Length: 61
Image (cartoon, rainbow, N blue to C red; front, side, top):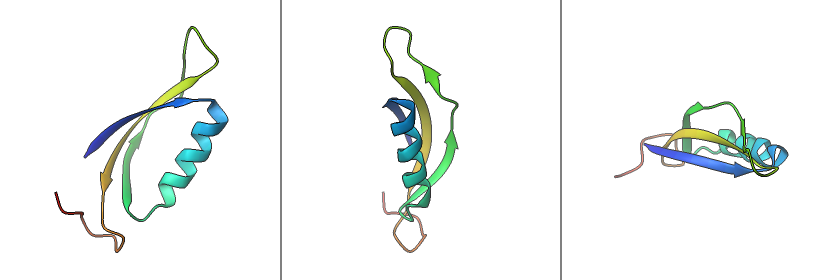
């Protein structure tokens, strides 16, 4: 399992989340809400994902 932090403009984050959810090599376990950064225009969100092979099985460690 991987825990990721994604930071960027909200529209860019949304586009990436749409892309990652349809990727057959990635199983998305959870996606947090968007959190705005205090000192700039960017936001962040947190993901837990699991890498799988392209056939839907678990990837080798």
